[in-house]
Length: 317
Ligand code: NAI
Image 1 (cartoon, rainbow, N blue to C red):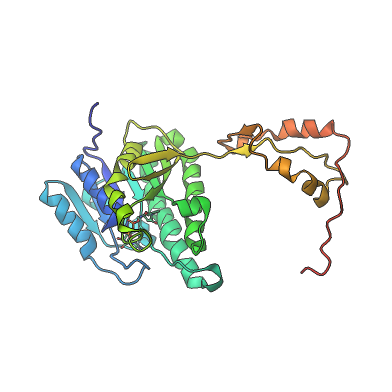
Image 2: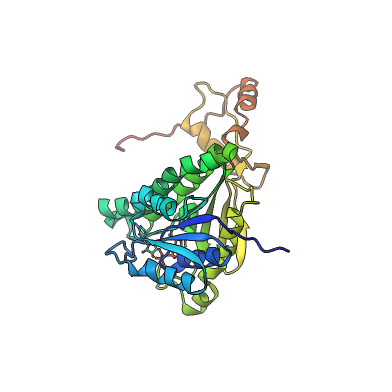
């Protein structure tokens, strides 16, 4: 099997001063890429800033003969990060949107700042960098984008409403770019990693953390961003050397007669059927995969819906 290499490619890794971003940067550089090591050098909650995080990673890369430049901009200034890439290396081929912060709090205690700051770094930061690089990638007819989602975004998690909202949004963002980039050989994929970093240091026992090395995420990121890889619009969970692909599953569902008998009580009557994943299921991969026309036809042949008992909302606001 020949080694996948990135010679001459320019990779922007956001939030690359530590954790996963650092592991990606070292990996890409070791395979011949020119790496923009972006990091604001903030704390876990987004507080403060320091150039040293990015500098240390660049230093490490240069020591082994690799090519890298440090960039200290906030991801919200994505155009400046892309400018660093263009000024230093003259192109942008790969973006790994990775920078992140946490402001975990139960929703009842979450304030606007907790919400906005988390959405800003993860979602808007990924938008700003990708948006600035998009015309360049279109023009050169090559681009590879990674969005960093999270299991919390896929499934939701207690105390992470802000983070989960951002992380799920990144999946929809990535899937849309997969469509828009197709014609221009630009792919976009989302990953939901699990790795030991300052983000997970306090929430898992050391024994588990020891098996979750950040370096174990890099092979998937590198595969998905390689020039020979055409896969786009995917979502992968990865950690400790295991990778799983994810997709949507829909039940066969229930077609109702769209008349006056289509009431909340009629829905209640057949809700178990609507939710039955043990019967026939679908695996839609695009908005077009739901056969609305077929279902409309089917509905025409129905007589009426079972009425059930009327659901009332008296006194509720
Ligand atoms: P980390 O905290 O070690 O790294 C994040 C980096 O982003 C830090 O170096 C920080 O300085 C930088 N950063 C924060 N705000 C920034 C901004 N506005 N502009 C530029 N840089 C900024 O965390 P880790 O674990 O390496 O996480 C990397 C990504 O993976 C994040 O998006 C995180 O949400 C995601 N992730 C990590 C998981 C894990 O198990 N470690 C689980 C699921 C998702």
